[in-house]
Length: 548
Ligand code: VG1
Ligand code: CO
Image (cartoon, rainbow, N blue to C red; front, side, top):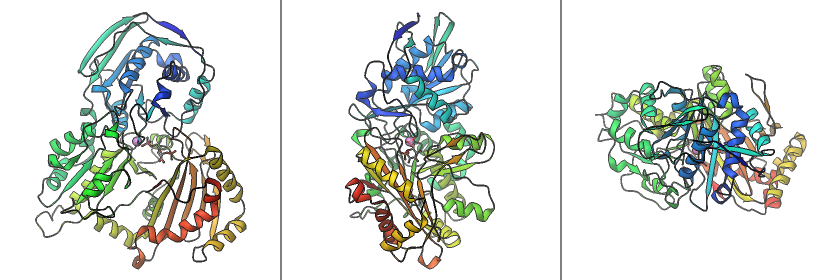
């Protein structure tokens, strides 16, 4: 193949957010849009690192992925990359990409050096919805801010990109290797099975035999909803073939370019079918609901686990870590912040506020790992019990946790598509307010006298204990005397307008009060949050778009 240099000019707004660059498909398909970003990434990595590299290119299969993969392959060839690995049909979940970078050995003995992941995660897909791209490093984790800042700088000055226009399109539906030769030597594209490396890793972590006993027991019923995302490419292999779950336990497990028209965000609002099957909706009364249900987002890094109750991640982990005398860290939003801690051996398990949990087996959150983790706890607790009268359930375990550590009632209010100026004003107001505890507490008490005092407020700033890098403006926190807290921040993953996220967490230590309805227990703190932030005045919104 030949290498063409194509002249281009900078395009506005290519700043990577919490997890890569996410925009509407109609933005991404503009001439040079994807190409500018990919070349800016290559330039940020530096030509020396790109030359000879082995790159993984795949994603959650959303609309435009197939075209994007061909473009990235041609640009990789032109930039001197040695090989590109593509999951069959362009499918790899975000955690599987991380696993492939860390574990996979190519047919010629090679190891990957990085990856382009094509996903906008939990955002909808299709011609009128979102596309996204992000770069992961050699450790399998998202590029740190030092790199993403450099990519953004490069997008503002780019003048040309390199592409091998005459390289034929690769058939990504068939496993195999294609070899080409270019000006700098050989270039290969290897298409491989999307699931095997990941399945192998999971089998090395969990006791599949033990989980199989639980899943194939007639007393345990299970349901997994992939929301037509890429988790579907793994669910059948893992849950049905390996673990003996019934075929009928899989919902929406065929990956689709538009996620079947749905919103692939595994929460109680969007995972409607699962919620109905579990009998958890307001008007649902399911016949024989499954014992255990779970769902994933588009790129299968998030999980929602539903027993007859669910527990999102929260400051609950701080309480447990303190009690067990373990080190723990609070980092800003986005998985990239965990990678450094893990590489330095400082952290082995982590979670975030949006249904994300994972461990140091890879450097991304991992939706299927989370399900297997829960299943192995249940399998262990029921080991001697599979022939008894009643199985230990998710609910039993959660209640046991509350009895020991207290309960963190938790909810998140999302105000989507708020006017960007109004959102900025609200945040600016809170930045100012956080500096005066007196002012805060008089507003708190004015709203609800039964809510405890704010003893600390700040604009969260994180100093990475490993490399000393500092991330500023990571949200406003109000910490209450009784262990409750409020956090306000702007989303970094949206593709239009602004999204305000409000995290509300009420801590209850008294074990006689841990069984209350969560929205009811949180009501006083919600009232305080809305008054304190003047939400209605700034945004005109009397209710959030999504409550999780
Ligand atoms: C959201 C979540 C955050 C997560 C990020 C990427 O970010 O709140 O916890 O890391 O999405 O997840 P934000 O900036 O919109 O709040 V995923 O599953 O989109 O890769
Ligand atoms: Co995701």
